[in-house]
Length: 196
Ligand SMILES: C[S@@+](CC[C@H](N)C(=O)[O-])C[C@H]1O[C@@H](n2cnc3c(N)ncnc32)[C@H](O)[C@@H]1O
Image (cartoon, rainbow, N blue to C red; front, side, top):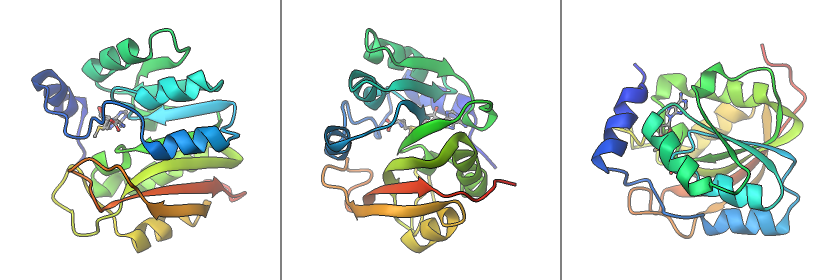
């Protein structure tokens, strides 16, 4: 089972977006302020794409992707003038270009658990060796009735350690109610392992 664009499209059109923070998490501000961010940045499942605008304003070339047309319309309005490029596309169909940073927030937990290995593999495929996967992860191993679908911290470690080394891990301070006390800021560096 996976959730297609029509699932998310309906939620945007109904205005039911409990994940939408209306702005940028404090952890991303710190990450940007302490830099360097990396030149080429990808924001998958960007939703309203507040972070894409922030990252572009800091000087990165940002591609933000969502497969919901309504999300893309919101993202284009939010990022107008920032230089971020918003693309209506399926993250799993991206190829041909590699990035220095993939920013994650409420995208992985929007995927059904059977897509997790594909997600990790695609992140690894899209990053240069040494590139980073950074953002907020919904680390609630009990939250299986999603979306959002939580993942236990140990399972996230096991999933990513094939292609990544964890550099940072701390509790998030400003989570929305849907994620509160179960969201962690993490930064992972892509290793040299080949993606099969
Ligand atoms: C829970 S929302 C989070 C949006 C945004 N990241 C945020 O933090 O506000 C999940 C988003 O991922 C998008 N999405 C889910 N699967 C996708 C896929 N395979 N490719 C591109 N976008 C996808 C949905 O359309 C939705 O906008």
